[in-house]
Image 1 (cartoon, rainbow, N blue to C red):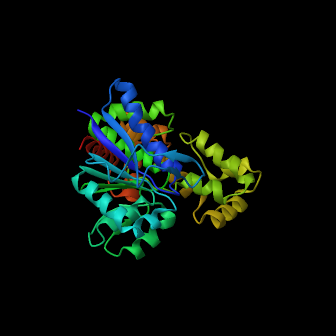
Image 2: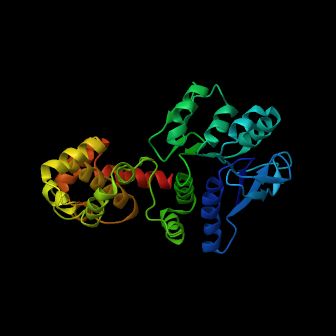
Image 3: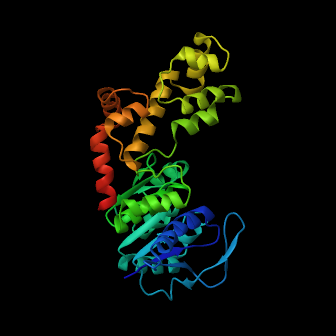
Length: 321
């Protein structure tokens, strides 16, 4: 029996917030050759809806006409505050949410979800740039700004943009198994399927935005040689600087030492491998440059409060719930 998944859109919604999860669920239908997810777009009325990007789309139905959904997905976008101000729209969304098994928010869609039940103590994720505003606007909400997605009872929420795809894959894994979610991720040519507790802002992305072009060769070298022994001397050689000068400039720009940065990248890669591969802990310790399971376990536990084995078990339990 198929699940009816309704995507609520409105003027100035974020295009990727709709397209990413919509394509993920649609891909399951394609891979199974049957409609396990009946996908519909919903709006306040039947007229062209204009996204932030200027793209115009026509919803399949109105929220008033829609009688019942299994999953209500509320898309993010600049127009979310206007939605909250419209009490008629909010009443219809609240009606649909009360009958749905799951309520899902993407990015700033969390504002609309919070407004559905302003006195409810929900835990919600949103785009990191809007987390303080969400907390200020809805004091009862516990805002999570450093995770890709979280669950609070029947409410699932994700950070910005591509994190919506990660949340959709997690829901697909719950419904059809981790293997299907992995197939969808591969079909969508995703680099890695990420667990919910991974940070929205990665060490690598931060480095790419913070460091000068000259230092990019050192960062690329780390990426390409993460499994090999690395030192300040080796990295300094990539940018033709003395080890002392390289260490000083890197630390000033990044706020951490070069070797702590390398360790963070290794830990992030280890998290990805634990979630998306069946490699043993010993093999992952080699692939990430830690060299031995005890060292990987010690550093991983210091950083995340759980061992690599516990982390993998938690991720498996998450996708199979």
